[in-house]
Image (cartoon, rainbow over all chains, first blue to last red; front, side, top):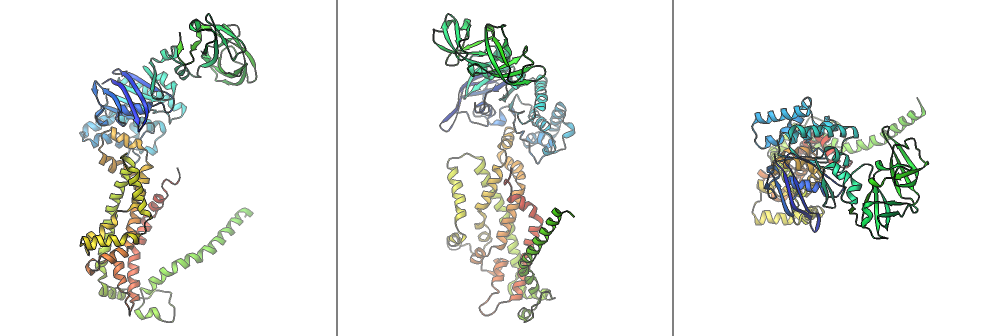
Length: 357
Length: 278
């Protein structure tokens, strides 16, 4: 097993730089998830670790060994791709053993590894089938099995569940978590789905436009986002943001809310008239009078999921707001409610998006 | 019978009534070729038009063999067509693979140059090619001269490049991460997946070589290295044309094409239309 270290890693395609100096230490046996919107460079970073993309500048080290110029096959990594990348003209067993056979691995050892991977993933009955005769979930298991037979030091997953339907995705997510527990191998996992990131990761790396925005444990990122981007990206539905202006002395006027005011300790550092953004998660919004700042809300859409309900509405000035409704569970589209923001749960961001504490 | 299904029936009848005679018109020359190959030399010019085969095929074949050594020319044609097809497939697929898989400086220019040659008429190329091979290299009447110059086929490169570019790149990345060498990724992953395109290309290349007349005519005048179409051409003289022998040879030349097409037409169609729809 091995850890992975990135030191000032940069990647440029021609004159366009897409990764702008990433530093990261993935510990031995850790499950790290790269998360971020499309085009943020998370897959590129993973492919650089795998050796499928050259490193323009900086160092990639696996198990303490710098691997910038090491062939992908000699890095001790195995990769699972979004499209499964199964060879369509080979059976499942041939898919699993292909790499080992091509590298002259002894036949008995290859058979042992294939049997072991098939047992771990419960795909033994499928060994004689071709990929086209498998469901999406089965194909993904085979793709994971192909990584397992290599007995790698580091597993790399590139959005492995995004082609599966919602139910199967949840099921495979649990299986990947179980696999990590069973093998104890270092795993780096790329996704744009923050739920996958929250449920699987020991630590999450949030990326935006080729830069690391924040690295931390899932609940740390949820509770203590360093900026407005991370606050908006982690958590579902995303955090509400309301425009605010300092009145001095830690008091804020919500400029889009017809003069509603709230006092926040974090606002002490703001000069009067300085603009800021107040953030409040949908699940932290309370019923009328229960918080420090009441706001009227017109419900546009009400989603009743059974265990909880989400109300999508607009405040007086037309600012969109999502509320996880506990008290207002029975609300419907068109209803007029009063909601309340608890100061203790509110976040404050300066005009550059940095969190103020 | 409902009015809708009766309308459909009438439409079918009308369609067949129109297309049937057209099909017969297309088949007529082929049928007459077969009929003429079974008639004696003077029978072709008899005032009564005969539409059914007679029994002179074997005699005509013997005359053809005596006049041209046809079996030897057939052997040359088969060897040239098979070797050209095999080597050309290997070369064009390797070129197509390189254009898809490698990001090298000048890739766009190389691709444009290869495909640019598609716009050149063959007759523009054939004279310089003849001067190079026959005069400068002195390779007239050799297997090399018959086989090597037609090997480099830009249409084949276009075909194979298209086939490889339709394959998800992650398949090859996966093999690369597994430590599979580039040659084995090409031969064990890419080529087997390109089988329909390879089959279509094989048919096209085989037929092109089999039917090739101009290049073998220029480069191989020695009877020992003559291809079958060229041998048939020699039967058209200034004073006499051996029609029965020509028709017999034409039947023998057509048969392999029919066989190839009947057996491989499934691949042919799927290869030609590969990538046309998602």
